Image (cartoon, rainbow, N blue to C red; front, side):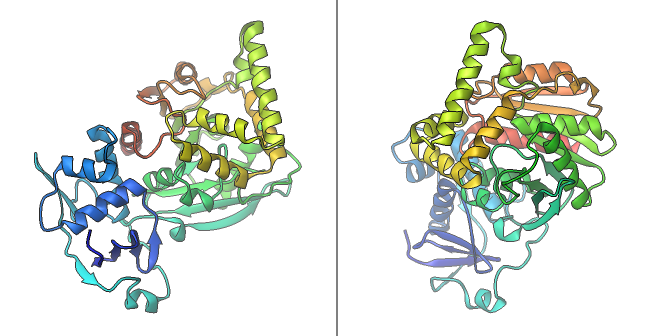
Length: 410
């Protein structure tokens, strides 16, 4: 591969350092998507076949064409392109792909113009988003707890309820969440927050109940100046979103529930065997979190990402350790086990999209079915995956975003 840096539009791609920059600021791109982009730029004088890209990016590892499609979408997203525009990467029907943006070879490193500008400029409405483009602010709950919230992107709002575990800053650097943020903030303004007890919000808090979480969501809504908006709830954040939508039907225009459930594990346990199993699961979690046992934390990570690699499990474990204290980790898990919105879900008044991995190993798909049966104007979509948190390079991720885009566009 050539050892040059190429400038196209507001971007610079350094093939030697394997780095994409925009206005002098590094743009985080998932590794395989960056490999794909580098190869296309290096061979921009011709059409690169699908087989060549699969061999170059994935080597001997067998993957489906869906993985290539996902990496291509991610690469386009990183440079402000889309499959409909194709102003940077063009699809050549039945042949492959070609880098078509006008690229100029420059000396390695950030351009002089970028340095003189003193950092990144605000992105255009259709440009990529990243940590350096988000705005973090703080507000206070009624009990004095400081809640951190962030906004990134431009366009119509989408509010994401907090879930296990978040960190407004560090999420951009972990492969567990970075593609979620970029995908959800594309062509819209994504507002999210760290729930009390983790991330940039206060860790030492007076209250730690489900109702506190719903109140905190309302505090963020008011602080962000939102009037009527779609609301996304992931995992246990889904129950919080349901409770908020019931409490404030005039504010929630549409509800999206991903990997969510109405009843926590101890609540939905039926029979002595299931109750004992749920209690044992919680006891193991207490011991694992209090002692920060790496064996337990690795198993815990594998429940969220059963199709993940050892590296992804280790990164997920390291991310959790950075987001909250061991004591709060236990408090969260205890509250999750006792969540129950099954008696109020029927009062949700807005259209609701329920998306769930068909073989989710952390929250069974039957829980999505229960939510769909409880919420009147709801539709259920099951995706082919075992992961509780969808990864960037599985076909289900593109489907997930496509369903959300279509639902919000209705």
